[in-house]
Length: 327
Ligand SMILES: [Zn+2]
Figure 1 (cartoon, rainbow, N blue to C red):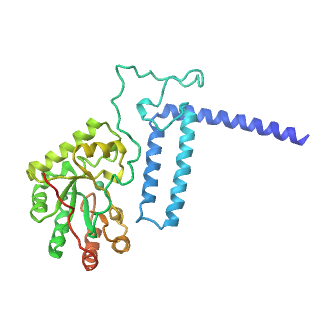
Figure 2: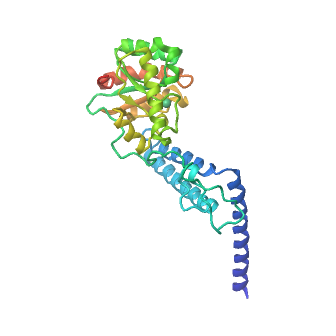
Figure 3: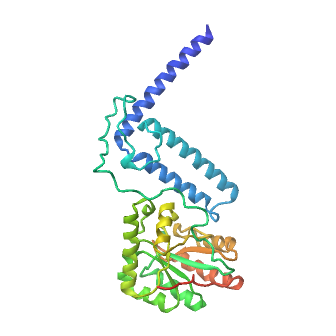
């Protein structure tokens, strides 16, 4: 009888598959509990990138965003199978609770006792809408430059801004400040606003503890103030835009403004001068905060693009540094 046989075959295949998946699961589980959180974070980054308004057309964005979402669901489901926990989304240290009888071949890792409990993490959910500044609040447009100061590229950006009479905002990486102190002094002397961009461009900073985030931000502020004492550093920009709700809340308590952007030409990827120009000019509207880079790699394309971007934006908008505020 074909139907029962087909059923039997299907059930055998199903059982075989499930054994295979289980075995694969054990291998992966042994390979490291860090896999699932890592994969999830990569997928979240992909999704966040795809949703950035300036990167793709809205149709392509929707497709990539849905693909990313489906992939995240897939990894989440796989994670649940592997670890036996309902939420693979929890942090690594807490992702392997002692499982009861569900999967005897996976040796339960030691239960985190009360005395060795990991420090409390910040709220890792996405920050509430509007809590990260992406627009200037008026008609003016703000150019922001990340990942400097850099001995080669920052002076060229500063030269161009000076020649064009444009003030901008520089998001500095703390550990690069001391070696490029003269450039930071020049930024201040020429009327640009400073922004803290973390000590070492930590993309995961928002997922660390309150104490770790605070220490990183204060260390970077201190490095900047060692060079330009008393200059206000009102803004903080999370590397990669990987904000968390907890981080944004903490920054607010510290008196910092979480600085995002409205236009991102992905110039750090060196997509070509014309691409950078067209992305910036095509997406900048009144009030936009524009992200570009004066560090983090070879910025000759950004510099070449600026030669066209500056006069074009100046013709349409008032360009200004973000308000520096008070120290
Ligand atoms: Zn950066």
